[in-house]
Length: 132
Image 1: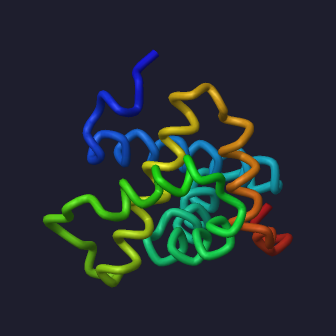
Image 2: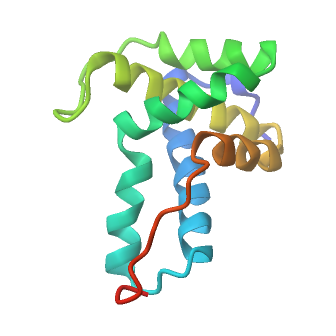
């Protein structure tokens, strides 16, 4: 298993992006969506930098000191490019969230990642019946 301190912050965020994506996919599949088109469309509501920044507002108060330090490490990483649909602050916060989720994954603590995901995204996606 890789130690989180042995990888760059950018690599940590890269891995964390996948961990968050897994949490999103698990959640959406369990919500009853059944087509890849609808699943992919709804996933955007969770993986955009702006959505991740909003989720982190809910997650931050429940982080341990160690988790908060990992989040800050990711957030403070030097960013060379920012998506067009996100502010610099949103993008930095999203990168911090990704680093946090990667750290939990590398520690073998996916249950904590799922717990934080549920805190960050407490409201279920409303799926119209015709989409299911």
